[in-house]
Length: 60
Image (cartoon, rainbow, N blue to C red; front, side, top):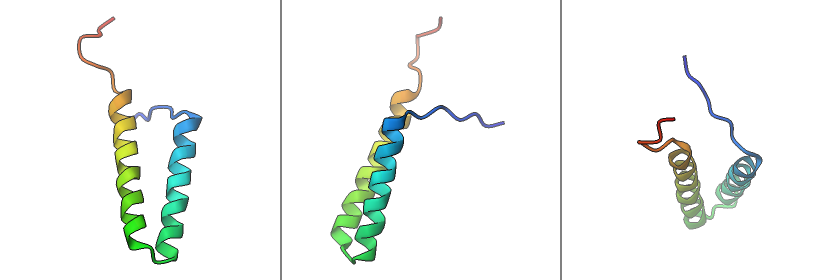
């Protein structure tokens, strides 16, 4: 069974804001801005997930 980690309110707000700005950029036809927002959103989510995983050697 999958187990999801808790996400703090700051990460949720950043993801919602970037998603809303992405939708607006697509709606107004700003392709370069949309690509930049997608890159930032994926990088932020990837960094958040990578940063929350426990490091090796911390076995307590």
